[in-house]
Image (cartoon, rainbow, N blue to C red; front, side, top):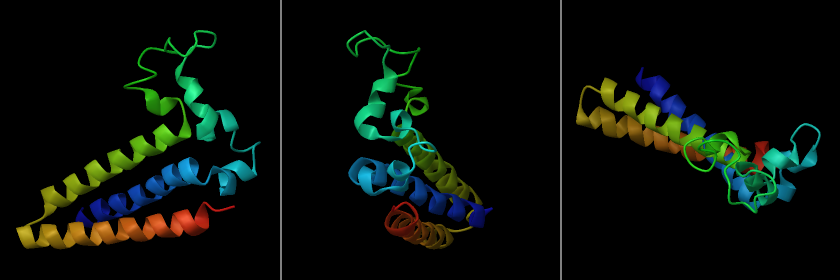
Length: 131
């Protein structure tokens, strides 16, 4: 179970890379490369934020209940990646903490998870998600 927690934290690094690639390098990403597979209205952060609002309301009325708060992750790719990242981090670290037999084991496993998070982020951001 500890290993699964470490893996979940590592996968969270991928979703952080998705967030940063969308926000900072949209035009150089795999998401911009194929607009038929990755629809701009969901993936392009410069326009996807509009999905939270009802059309024709001057961005003042929610598209559906909680579309600007609790359920914002359903409106665009950046928020979906953010929700996925935080969920995996919380669940992964909780699993590590719950299953650890000692404080030393906890520190070692969380440290390994953090390293895996960073490696996964770097590989995803620089290679996997780059066009």
